[in-house]
Image (cartoon, rainbow, N blue to C red):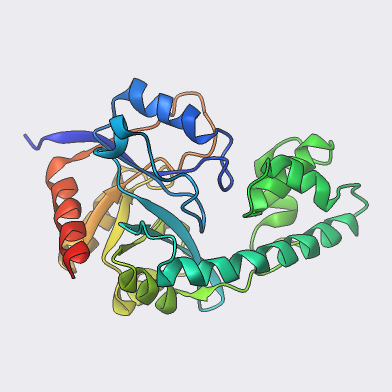
Length: 274
């Protein structure tokens, strides 16, 4: 029987759009006794460095917002730890574009008669420099415009909703190249959310190193298909909960084949030596 490890390589804190601060999430990592984990906040490494007792169990990294064919594509950048690396320098420039985009989205929502402000969004972000749609969604819930974050996305903020404003992101190809130039490996995050069936094949052609196999959006049948795709193309396989906020019945941590985790560690070691 294949051995498994409890891992979570996709988690968010208040450094981007998560609910918990870094220390609160790390407390949960200790309680769950994760064998390997990554805090993968959007476009930032502000959660790092980590306490000494957990550093050996952590892979540094982040989630990078990019686009492919005009659609949003998220990449997990594992092994990136230098805040002055080519990737982080590019994301610093992208972060300023987020503020402008958020102001435009607030204006768009206000045109629907909703009394929400950019300051309301910043209050939900709790000081993070990276404003994202979940922050606006929570502001809409707080002002009573919608009953839930999901409803905010469905009605106003999803890619095809009436108040969505595109973010001027890196192309997926540029993001992958920057991740590689920063000694990292590039993983296609939550591939079941890709807009077109051909997107994953395009990402493979662009040079991704792996696929996030286990994610809340992938049922067992989808995971099996994704794993088959990864193995057929010689790619790494990873797993994570995409944690943003505690949900009943969905703790952090995913049982995942130890063999796949070992392959990821080996790939990271090779990239670090290049």
